[in-house]
Image (cartoon, rainbow, N blue to C red; front, side, top):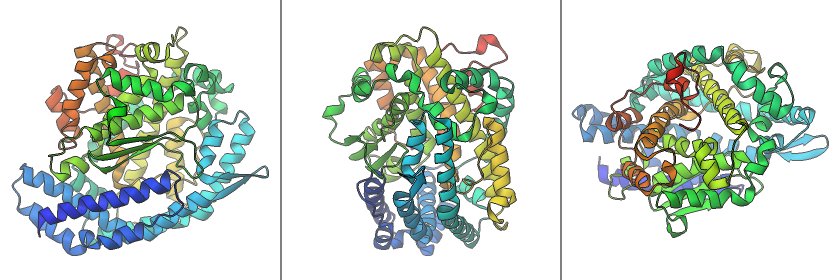
Length: 513
């Protein structure tokens, strides 16, 4: 195999794939011609290519740079092999999502716009009707395709000789899912008793209902926090982000390699995202405007991705620029979205004084909900992907859907719908990237505060330190990056202290630390 030629074509594939993904999910087109992209680069993902990369990796010295790069390439090839097999299903799913219309009280609401509508809806009964329509559409129109996609993926895993999807991801991505699961289960146990105390008052203040009355349909409105809109004006969304970058020594307007899209557009994904077309030459950020604090969190989060990719050393090998451990880029994203709850950032960028602590309390409760949800999601995904020989059950009445609803419902304390038990599965155990990123971000934020003070985001020297980390792309794993930075191990339990829930009061962090 000519590895240099393989890398060149792999980079071209990612650029073309990114163009298609960006155009569709930014709401610029309903088309999603992934099949054409895969057809042009099918050789990258052939069984022969996977086999050759596997053989090359087996012959590389353990711990060598060559082995590190080959493992990343093999991971890319296997993901592409799965993608090539399932690309028609993925394209059909994307097109159905883009064109599905929900009938709610005689009003047509786009499937992708439904969560935005829920977030902005003051009437809990109408939120419930929107949720019901969205879940029905998921169950009837999308789940059959998700089921086929999962079945096809399981067949490929078996064909390639791995005992399970979990085993494949652990090997190719260097994950220790057993250790991560133990750590996240410990987090669930450690935060169980405090959950009502942290979340209950915020639910009551934000939505006017008790925690016992909270429904899954209410969560978008809870996170939206419309009562705080005056503190997060739409007019300051982009200027505050621009000023934050300027404080770190980054002139956003002078970056020819970045594009920021915050326009409202039909068909736009309800989830903000960044597409690194070519790193670092072409990086694009897309945020769906919802309103208020959520827009700030979305822009800051994706802005972290944007600047990470935009500052990667262009001379790095392809693998380190566009492959590797995504927990690293997610940690930089979480670092910036955390600013939306940082008292010093709120004062300096928005002129907001959280005198009564309402903003901090809401952010703390929201983060606890997300962390517990993802900890439960990991346990569910380990169940789904633990045995490639286990067939899928009979849908919403089966044990998988039941286990999903039970796990997430217990973690978040709301009755959780079964309908999303297949759509809530992210490829490549990306749930592990998020969880490890949250832990890494906590360490990274403390390191910045210790070195540059609580207003690190307004310090050119902190920007220089971040640019030094960003230049390395994703050459290192999250664990390796943290070990190099502080020598500490990556442990999810650090989030307990960061939320101020440590049994040791001296270990609890003050708001904004």
